[in-house]
Length: 101
Image (cartoon, rainbow, N blue to C red; front, side, top):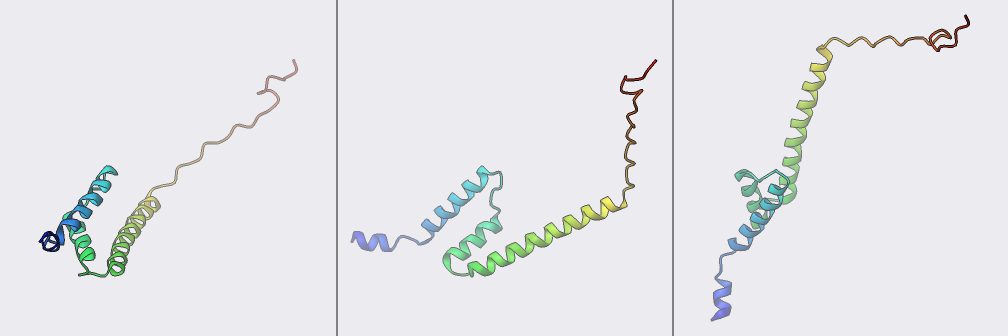
């Protein structure tokens, strides 16, 4: 009877605990999971989605966002006028205090 009760326990309990543990760890790094992240994790853990495909899509999404931000920074810096470098003083004997009087 006990064995039957254990087998009837919903499979979602360990999955939800795993997701909660991951969310806790990510929150410690100030990056809590979104509901979409939790849904993706749930799909991977239950076998509804292929982990490798989800990883590929995630990397692609973040890589393209990073590339777009880098391009914006590059375009913004190219449109700014260049700052003139300050001229360096030449050190002469007189400026070093070795002038002969």
